[in-house]
Image (cartoon, rainbow, N blue to C red):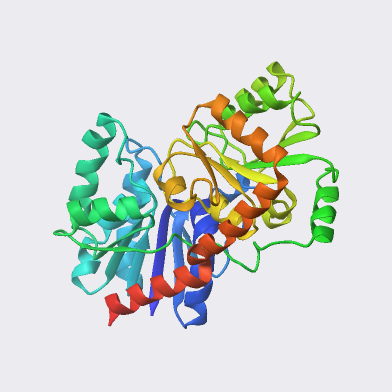
Length: 377
């Protein structure tokens, strides 16, 4: 069997799909990837478990002529390779792929679209519904299976798209429990030392691209309120992106040099997550956030903003706490409480590990494998 993964940028495939690709290769599948290679700015992120990579000039901008080039290139590729399955991801990557796959579907190729989070959802803007919903509705008939990775999107897709295509749900793309798991006190101390942290530091980690959606500015504002209240407060921001300079300016303006540290893009967060005291995410929108699952598998309590991905994972007062995105005052109060209550952190972390197990890669690869078997049998 031969499968093609497509996405607008290669970093998406490397960040989210490698565990499943590894599993498919182990099961005898030939795995190809078509995407625009952006790994030069991703600090060591590598493509693995791939038999063939095809550089494809996708663009995130719908107006870019590069997407027409990508469409023509994909049509040629699909006519030559005769894939059994195409699994497409990301908004523009999936649209271009599904359009290019029209002929090959008639010849028996099965096309899967994995939605990592619809742009229209409960609470999203009317503009998002007016623009993105009609596009997704139209494109739904151009695939054989639409996979959603959170329960809210699954319910919406079943209601709106099930007459156009088959709709299924899996528990995200999976987190590797061999990488993310609780560490011993000795291991945690060694990890802290490697990051220049002391045993006495109270360490908060926030992971994600430095962009408007991830909203790290709210965490920086909360840290400004807490710098004189939590001794040895340390905030680590892992990621890179367009808002980096703006965040650096905010850190300086708030007098947080030495407290808030930008780690840059990291591919070894399994050496950081177990060493921190808790994990924060301030995103406005999430489909199924891996950073939250990683934290929970490491028994770390989570403080996260309300959105469909966070709301599905975080059980209020049981595995962590939720707050409204942008509410720095509420976030600061929650962080202060957790800094003062070590037993609560321990209780939340232990409950979180149990709650995260269905989202581990061992579970999700079985779900995906079952869907592939049903589709190709």
